[in-house]
Image (cartoon, rainbow, N blue to C red; front, top):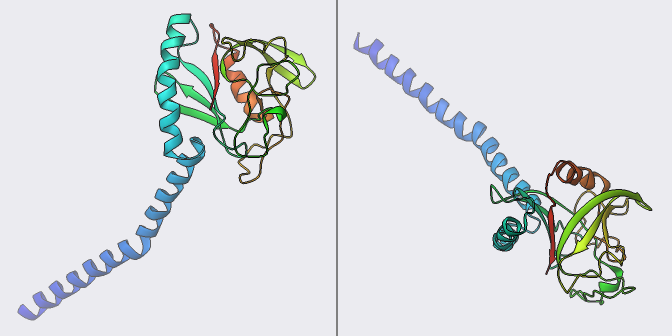
Length: 219
């Protein structure tokens, strides 16, 4: 009787040991892979990683206040960080209600802003071909030279000539859908130009908004 009991205990311990070993050697690598995937996706969403998210969130605090005071859309704003290389995602769709980045994409800067170094030159002058920093009101859509586009109205001294310079939000096929860094993407003549698929995503937010959406280009 004791012999049978001993055999039963031995078999039970053996089964338990095999189960534990199976857990660590079979299931654990799957969990590790899942964690790695999450980190990669998170970095894609915020462009350069968690530090970029902090910078965007810090600026969004002021934009949220501005939107409420000036009667802009209080749910979403668009932000472009020109301190990020053009080959990386730097156009952010920010959810002001949730304090989170919902989408990110590539966006051009003006050819006139290129200095030959990592630093960009910004100008509000007509014919400069430069990007202008500052807050913009996104206006009505229209069909132009590059298809669907949205008029932009500069709200500060640094971008007050945006409308007369024909600086608009539009798409172009030269802008990739995915990051290409360390390569750069094509420049524009000062327009924030995005990939066609990304513009379609922006359209779904802009066209259903009852109030204007605020765009800020900053460095």
